[in-house]
Image (cartoon, rainbow, N blue to C red; front, side, top):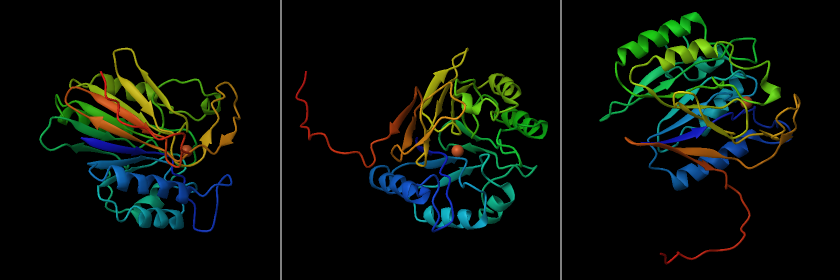
Amino acid sequence: MKILHVTDTHIVPEGETLHALDPAERLEAVLSHARGHHADADLMVLTGDLTDRGDAASYARLKRMLGDLPFPVRLLLGNHDNRESFCAAFPDEPRDDGGFVQSLMEIPGTDDRLLFLDTNQTGLNGGRFCETRRDWLRRTLAAAADSPVTVFLHHPPVDHVMAHFDNIGLTDRQALMEILRAHPGGIRHIFFGHIHIPLTGTLAGGIGYTAGRGPAHQFRQDFGNPAPDWIVGRPNYAVILLEPESVSCYGVDTIEAELAATTTPCAGP
Ligand SMILES: [Fe+2]
């Protein structure tokens, strides 16, 4: 299965910019590249901060941009999003019985499941995974029996060294991870956004995780600085290959890159 991971798109209304950039123009670079190179993808997942202010105009703009893609799209919420405005713009996006934008997706022909979680909490920059959401997750994973699960969410459920995020992390990450670790089918990988830098790692017990940077503004990798600069970088996304024996993630960060030299096929050996 091929999944395209895009995060932190931070769309603003038409005519506006954000940190001197046009987030829609940068997302369009990603979508154009994905159409041209990965039209065979099975799914595109956007892991939150879909819009910068959670306003209706920005969601409407995002909806127009995603309207003609050759693969289905799954949308998650980040701290910059507004659940009410989002649900008004995307009424068909799956929600749980408590109204949270989270769901479990079956993959036809396999035992694998994709788990999409909602860590948005109105009024907070940090994330929450409250008891109501945890209850849904316990019930959902119990019903998934022994199926291996790949997780997508906005806030990192893992520790990292970016000081800027010390006070805006996922408050309930330990409780969330306890539930995930207890899943009999195992967690194959966890994909998230929020930190606007590339990060990959492995937790004790072997659960791997990967953060996307996102096509919009990105952080300078100044780990201990609580106020690192925003930088331009290049619009980027990731191609996830979810195979029976492996999960691999290719960062596509070459969009709009300047040419250094052309190459020819290597004859080997
Ligand atoms: Fe963000």
